Image 1: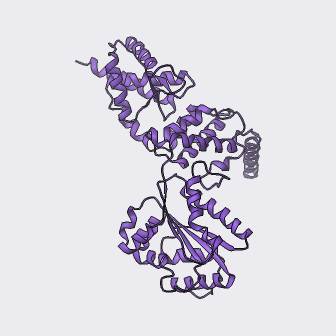
Image 2: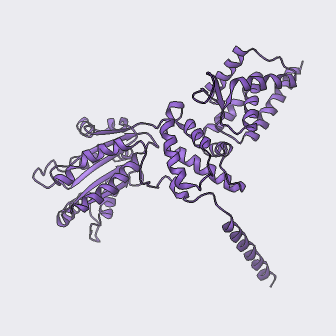
Amino acid sequence: MGCIVSSGLKLMVSWEIIKEELSKPSIFKGKESLAPEFLPDKLPHREEQLRELVASFKHLVISPGSFSQKVLIVGSVGTGKTATARIFGRDFTRLARQQHINLKYVHVNCHRNRVLYNVILEIARQLEVPLPQRGLSAQEMYTAILSHLDEMNAYAIIALDEFDYFASIAGSDAVYFLVRTYDEYADMIKRLNFIFITRSTASLSLLDSATESYLLKHIIKFNPYTSKELYDILVYRADQAFYEGVVDDDVLKYIAEVEGVDRGGRGNARFALELLMLAGEAAEKEGVMRVTVEHVRKAFSAVSPEVVMVSEAIYYLPLHELLILWATVRLLERGSEPYVKIGDVEKEYAMLCEMIGEEPRRHTQVYEYVMNLKRASIVDAKVSGKGYRGRTTLLSIRYGPLDALERLVEDLIRKRKIEASKP
């Protein structure tokens, strides 16, 4: 009997917890718009690549079946390759159907479908090709796909995502099989067209020279995003993801500058959007209705492998570089801006030196300390732009939380002082 009461009490507690959590207000109005798989209505700064795709495949609307197009999309992680291809496929097929052309778009992830058989099986599944129960070879399934398209008077654009992975695993013969589909059938209506999505062209060197050169004929490049481009993307997605007034503009600019390729980042929009989502989750967990730069730092520390390396690097800093770092952390904690001026850091540093009985170094040496911290990726440093009188160096820290970092730095400074006092 006691067990029944006990389990009943547990059920009541869990029910109350669920009700309480569901009743809390959320700062998100459309959190899914920050997810990697989300397809927005528009892609800022990928209009040119979209135009190139349309130009490459417009024969499917003007003279469908006249030839089989193959396009290679190349770009590093988070540069919008997959999203651009999917949005192109979604909207281009819709336009084609309006003109009574039966065009289908198929997107295959080659990391999940690693060998030729699985790739062809996935193409058949998405095209809804009826296959017999008995097992078919890859060649037989491919023939069934071509026959099905003929019967339906249909055409298809096949996007093979993470194609470099497929090329390295499946090998040159498998790639050749797909790329040169119509070589032996010159008079056949060309119903299959391909988009190959890859991080770089380096993996293609594993293929035979004829196949490699064939793939390199039509390349659309996706460069890493600059901080300005990432800012535009973040503004657009934040408007969809959060209620008005939840995310300050400084937060979006900070994320953009941390990740922008022109600021030393990777130019990865996927990572920038993940940072924004995690920062929002951190704010919501604290029960606050505004996302701050400190929430971004917490998010960065949760997802960045750099944090481990940075924390290790801090342990080996000399005393005065630790003091410069401590001064920077204190100023960032006290203010709401993502960056602080080097002049203010120098004043704070001098005050801290006096507090612990150290002689502060001169300005030129302080600047050298700052550059050392930047080279170690412990602080971010940039030259000021608009909104500042004159030119100065601005400092920031991308990881956090700052209070934990300050405790670490203080503890290390105390240990350095103890070590220095030993005979």
